[in-house]
Length: 305
Image 1 (tube, rainbow, N blue to C red):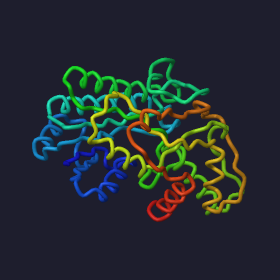
Image 2 (image 1 turned 90 degrees about the vertical axis):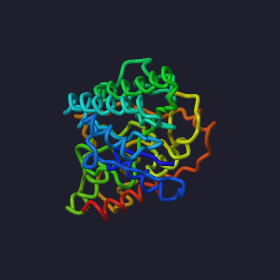
Image 3 (image 1 turned 180 degrees about the vertical axis):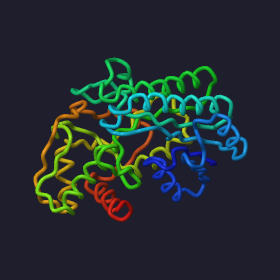
């Protein structure tokens, strides 16, 4: 199986490349921004002609946390639309055996009182804190769905819950919640600070999936013929942001106070996916959050300092 993985320098892409080492039948062709400019359709066509991939896992996207989405709204909608449209063009014209397109659970509408089902997409207004990213990603999801219906392509849009793990982007402003908290709490520890301030109230609940778990699930799905255009991928492990912060503090040995500043906002108060469709397709043993956090922090300490 000759698999093209784009966005290979990101969290999910790097995890896929690492996980692929456990599968003898896989020949992975990873590309990052420095290898292949996905804004240039002609370069993508040349790459396809030269490498002749049979499968595609489309991971490439501009992603970030609440602060990044609010400060760069045009970049998030513009760049993601261009990347997606170019990939959709080559998928239409190249005979891939199977394509997996990564969406994101954050493009679902704000639903606090129940698990989010695939059918909830576009049923309510979008979450304002990342609406421009969401609009771009929904355009991609629906374009891939239309391509599959009209041309009979084997395309699966997957909607992962919040992903964390080794190879993440660790930054206190532009990264997602877990790496941002790791960075802030560890910095507070090494600087001898008595308290650390985190964004929001700490009350929202979030479901998290370990990146290597997601990678293994994607490989399991890659060669299956699935009758869904959209498939949620979650772990069922849901914690408040405050609980996550406390676990990270314990692991890194920070004994100071954790304070919250709600200037940026919380986003949805709860976001957990209904994964009943996924459970009908595969069985999977998920990495526990405490273990996954330790792996993530170990990676950060070894590679990011």
